[in-house]
Length: 228
Image 1 (tube, rainbow, N blue to C red):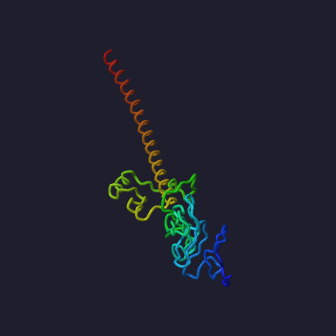
Image 2 (image 1 turned 90 degrees about the vertical axis):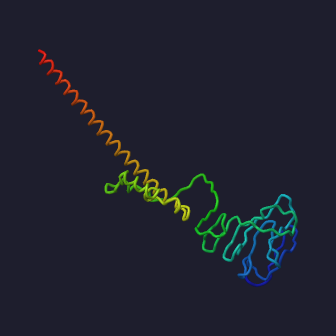
Image 3 (image 1 turned 45 degrees about the vertical axis):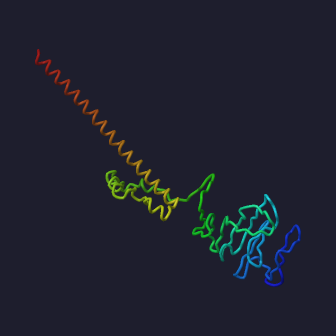
């Protein structure tokens, strides 16, 4: 509702913190709302302050329209509350934009989930197209000499972004996974071809050895007949 008075009080002591004429914890576009433990916002100057004095307890909460309009954030005091009523500048743990983007380590998320930092996970599933097309009969497998020429000129593999491009634009995990799988499959095909050439050369060498042996035996027979 948008009428009447909303009193915000400390649950334990009943101490009134603020009294405003809005019953929704948002704002009229000029301020922010806060759900928090051991914290409140000073109505007169919109500062964040500790509710109580604790040497081992900090403050954490959820702030609407913070740090900017059209955002909501999980915030933390980053330290304990040495003095009740002392102000603190909250650290933003996670930010939620009106468009659905979520940021961790950033207050300006550009993707549905934008993480600026290191993530740890027990498992990650990435949807990707795979690279089975490499095994199609009409796929052109570039000769290694051609690949070597490309590397010498561009200093990276064909169809793989350069280091500079990845530094500037980043790299899609799913797309890179498919590209790297394609390179592994191409390498496998080159190894198969190399093995087939090796087997042909071994067969030709055996045939040459057998032919040389037969010629040597004929020569020995002819020499033996001439001696007699």
